[in-house]
Image (cartoon, rainbow, N blue to C red; front, side, top):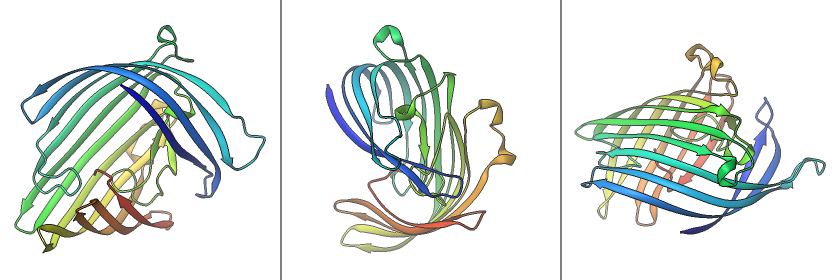
Length: 251
């Protein structure tokens, strides 16, 4: 399969000010072997080759623009027993994955990333409690700009804007509450809130819970005909916060 992707990658200073925006463009081709386990799980093993470039869209024009090559292999095991990936009320979702970028496959650099994601939910009538953990780490080498982890938004630091946090490693501990407000022509509307311990680090030795930032947020959600929609407000322990509108974003 072939893909052409573009994305805006923003960088921020320590005060949350946008210092630059990069436009990342990449063209890739990939092949994968998938083994499904009924409707509740899958094992995916893939290989990818491609090229891309990062262009400075806003910011200091002296910032470097880079062309790069992609060559990696990946594997992921997924178990999905959630009733809804966007507004979970019952069940669990777990994913373990690994990606290896190798010069032998045409990449510019060697690095390895390992990912663990878990989200669980338990419903009580119109109420539901949610809990989760994300642990993502560059276990070998150094990931380049286009491959570093980026956080922000519900489930990834609700007190930050999307892509406001970045690093070679990150961890998120999540606790959430969901209440079904109403049923609108067969589609549900929700009130939700989360508390999240979030941070990103460049050195794995810095992965400590006591260095995490506490985030909290509330939102209104609607499982609409065009996709899940959320509107809310998140704040982090420094007192800085952000309004957000998300469409089609999984928990």
